[in-house]
Length: 589
Image 1 (cartoon, helix red, strand yellow):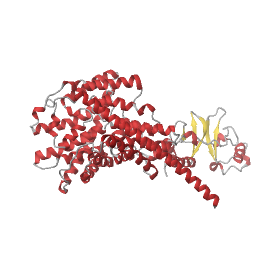
Image 2 (cartoon, rainbow, N blue to C red):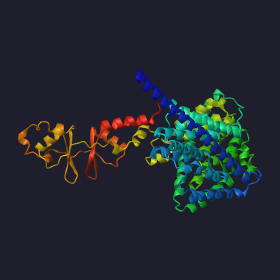
Image 3 (cartoon, one colour):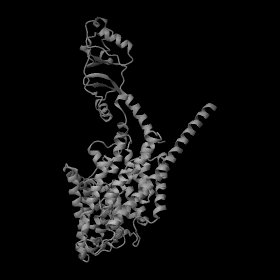
């Protein structure tokens, strides 16, 4: 008993030391990702202020036509001549690295997305800084994990810590950071994984608060409390947001496909940058992240959305204002897609929040105008943000908690929950995947959101091949086969010719009635007894294909054949055993 106790104590001590190391690494990741988020926000704000901070609100400004193209051009030049790698669609790249590259993220992603997105967004690119900084944080986590030689499961966890720290740092919202990692990146929630995520999230958020203060990102002051009789309108808002998110996803992907049809990068850059400049000139709220516009609708300053535009003189016409809001909703998605498709770097977080806030504000404004209601415009703008986040990203909890944290609007939890859930239920009836996962799913490369596929993805066919089968020639006799049976521990016998080509196989059960008939030993040949299996495995098959073949065939063993050449067999039992071991490797107990 004493020996067993000692072994248990040693094992426990080793486990605790391992967890302690993970905690320290997650703390470092939180510090670095929090600083990265802080630097990126400061850079974007500084560049934007230098460019447009002096514009007169009552006049349109033609510089809007030039700045976006300049920013995208700078971004493209940096990527082409210094980074020399594709760094677009940050969150999709993280999902791809987890799904297809065992969590490996190139080290330059720890800074490249920050530098390029600061020029794209600072010069007016209609995207958000969140995806670039999330990729930055994930890269920091992945590369620190590799440096400390952590196992695969811990590498994935550290990627999650980096993403959590990035979201927590840029929004000063640690809970939202964790929810993003769990809902969007689909990391398993266990106590072993939750503690490092909490450490990274709270560390990054504290750093952000220390340098930028504890004021919420959006200045939302609760003026109108939630009224139960408004529930039907919040349900309607959720349905509306669900359909807007459908437009958001499909139009964004369509615009990207159209832009990809332009083969030359410089032409894409010129066309996209010019189109973006025209859109921003006509609709100045499309400039950059759009957070200033969100603050306006939160503080009863919605008419200021017409500042710096050609339509400033029409701000007193409520019907024109309704049309203006609708055009903002439609063109924000196009502006976002054009920015990234033409070479800019940024994400969909900010555009999603923008469309949600403007959409909620529009709906309340329209209903009040048409039906003489008194719906609170600011409350509906806030609920719209949560609803759009929930539906576009297929993440209802993220929509609820992120919106509440970045606005301080916890008093409106009920409408947030109602609108977010209804929006999510609406979108999933039409879109199985979020905008992040749709591209990977179309290519058949998405495994993070399907745990069974994730485990199979990391199993290798080569590791499962068994070769301890007695091989026999098709010209051998039944007597020769009997001798092979006496030496074999298997009940399957591959029939292989002199060139290594598999001609068939023999099962013990099929010859049991003649195996002891010695009169047949010299007159019956193996080629008369063999059969070619209907199902077999190629070394190039994925484990998904292997699993499907086992399920379809009902067999317990399948031959592995490479261009006709016999390699070995894979057994259902070994696949299951390996599957369980892989599950243990991926799990954090």
